[in-house]
Image 1 (cartoon, rainbow, N blue to C red):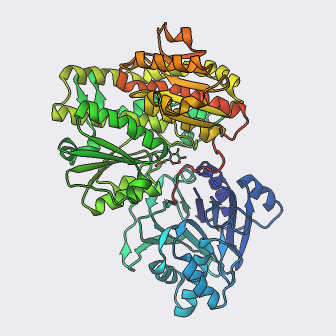
Image 2: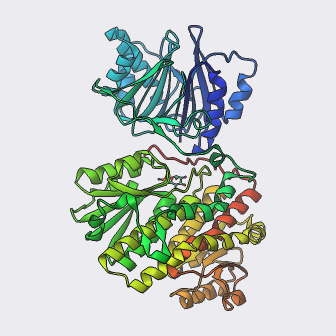
Image 3: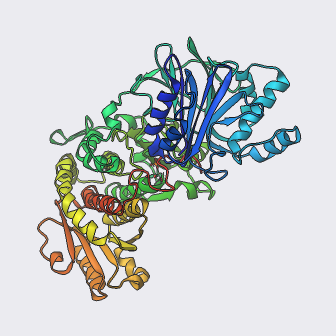
Length: 612
Ligand code: G6P
């Protein structure tokens, strides 16, 4: 969602901000803008559309100056128009602000300001914030940072904001609550962004702003204080992301690059944690509270989107290996339902970005009733990583494509390791099975590598079905969440309607949809429900549906009945999702690309959903 970039230093702020906004394009947005504070004025440029539209618009304009703020907006309050784009100006035009988040009490604040004579140039909640700060500064005759602080004590909602002042161009003020903000610390220069990707080419030294913290930044230093006006110490961390990790490296799209990175990202998620030959499986991040998991009467998994699908796979792991009941909840439903959380329950929150607003709020809710929360997160230092008691990073590296691929497989890998640690400690898994699974897990990257060889075959099938209007994905057991994930991948990036179902449920509804036009993807690898799924394939064929089957290598039965097959290496039934999802990712990618869709930035979607 909304992307924030700001710069203060000796370089040309415009160039750094435009480049940074392009690096944040993956988050999803519909308009972009920049404001520069120089020569005692604010130069403001904003445009509906892409960052490239903004660049075209600024050709020939005055773009000088070393202080500026830039923003990509994902519309919430007000349509994506030039006026609603950020940055926004104060009423007198001397201050400018960018904002990511949602201000819940903007309407009452706006009415109050209108009654004082303020006029607004946009329909956004964000513009109200800068008018409000301006009003407070005028009434209290105080410094800008104090006005920001006082305003934030009255503002209800989520925000990451950065402000510039035309009368004090050597100043950036930033603050956050529930929306991410990172400050890059250079030599006599500072960078601010929603995540580290626009910063890492300039500096690896960063400060993650905490909730309710305000940063007052000048060329000669960075000062932090909290909303109660108590100074806090900036904790400077060194991040270890390399520039190549956030570039396409010869691939047409980030999504394709990330699909192909999976042998490595899965290995990275196990690195230093698992050595099968020694029976070694240690997750350093879950040591202190691991007994809470071992003794849990129930595990509640909370997540959204693809992470929720990883949670569904984990449900099978924990139930089968640890013999503990598991509930997998959409974070957004969980938090608003007055859920029953008992002391003996343990929560696992899964999130790639670590910033998903609903997941974060669900964590806070569970924490408020005393639950212990484990995080399974990709982005190091993210809000969810910091909000949880313990956790295991998935170490998949930056995922830029909006449609999650490598994060899913790394999440499933890490969740399988957590479940195995718990099962072993509980004694609910036999030694033989435990060692068998460790061995199999360790060689999964090679099997994923083999599955990636289905690339060209997937493209041929994609070409055959690229004009379909509906798709059905069916699987059973461990492959049921994979069916859901396959359908989600397709609809996200190709805009083809797709549904995932447990194969046996087909008879209770979806079978009515099947005719000779309907492609049905079966995830039908050889597992405990193999015979049953063959019957389901027959049912589809009897109604002339077109069957695309993901099958285990060497299967001789399904090739006789399916129209198209994609053969994946054999692995343990529980680990099959890591392999069977690969051709589904490839199929979606190629269908979307052949339809000419913007694969990495699908319409209306955001990578990091920082509003409810
Ligand atoms: C958005 C993204 C999905 C992602 C979901 C949950 O919808 O487009 O790819 O699965 O958010 O995000 P999280 O970062 O919490 O895993």
